[in-house]
Amino acid sequence: MSLTASTGFDPSASSLSHEPSAKIAAEPWQWWRSQMPVTQNWAYLDHAAVAPLTAGGARAMVDFAAEASQQGDTVWPQWAAEVDGLRGDFADLLNCDTTEIALIPNTSFGINVVAEGLPWQPGDNIVIPGGEFPSNVFPWQNQKRHGVELRIVDTGADGQIDVGALRNAIDDRTRIVAASWVGYASGFRIDLPACVAAAHEAGALFFLDAIQGLGIFPLDLQQTPVDFLAADGHKWLLGPEGAGVAFIRKQHLELLACVPVGWNSVRAAHHFGQAHWDLKPDASRFEIGSHNMVGMRALRQSLSLFRQVAAVHGPWAIADRVLDLATTLDKKLREAGAITAVASSRDHRSGIVTFSLPGIVPNTIRKHAAENRVAVSCRGIGVRASIHAYNNESDIDRLVEVVQTLATKNRDSD
Figure 1: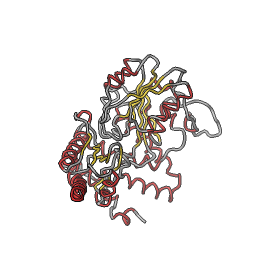
Figure 2: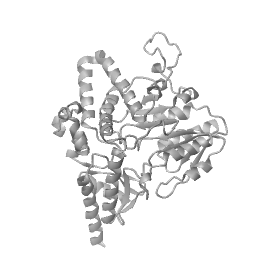
Figure 3: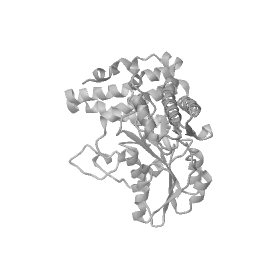
Figure 4: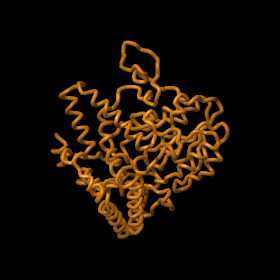
């Protein structure tokens, strides 16, 4: 069944190339919403889990399938050009060199590139905050086999990371500090420049798990000298699963062993009959095999929305929109009787609002929300709503109505 037949939405009708820039200038969020087929069916507030695809991303996947079925790999050069284009787009987004970008299948892969590649010595240690997603725990924990200690720094009940406590955990044997930009359950956004500075002042490297912040919050890697970064595109970047990005600062490239390694890690990658060990001189050496062409192509289309809005309205426009919507959601949920857990300072907030309703288990709220076509998740202390720039107050009100209905039923049953 075609996308049009199954959803009633024709992705070709929303081609970015046909959209006048005046729409982006005058009504950027309504324009963005028009690029999101999911809005016809759901109040989608689950971007911290798996995001819906943009119309452009869906169209890219449909077009790829048609090309692959009708042309085979005769159009492979065009596909490869899209991959290179995505690498350049990420370099522009992060203000870094294209040689520092690797296109990877997921965040876990990117973390393992660093964790397995560093030249560990017995007695080294790694520092991470408490409450990290397992992807940013297990690869570091796995270095115990090399005699490396994992130190976990306690965080506040709301996920707050105290930079002083982080700094106190670092000593002269700390090789790297690894932290999430935004806590997956709490939504707490770290003071990234301060955390990087704390690591560097102590002579340690800094790794950023950027999956819950990339695309929403601007990051200039010339201004904030993160050493390594990884993120998948299937959350806030509105891409498909299996397509992501890693950043490896060029001066650290030779520090990392190329683990794992594959045919695409070397300069003469397509000279299959000559297996000559000559690693590529840039981060693409970690793109060890065939690319997820369809996923990368779709991610590039989705990423173009972010780049277009930022080009017209500035690098903080998307973040400000998301923070404003999250603040509105927090306020309305509390007015409806929910208990919310968000950072007190806007500087530490994100698009994630986690809440609970006294006397009602979180999964009941999530299930009732789904029945009313509102998408949320259960994480941490309760229900996690994660709001994006294309969402609007009608989406917020649909979730609030679910909460109000459950709160009323709970009171009436007492």
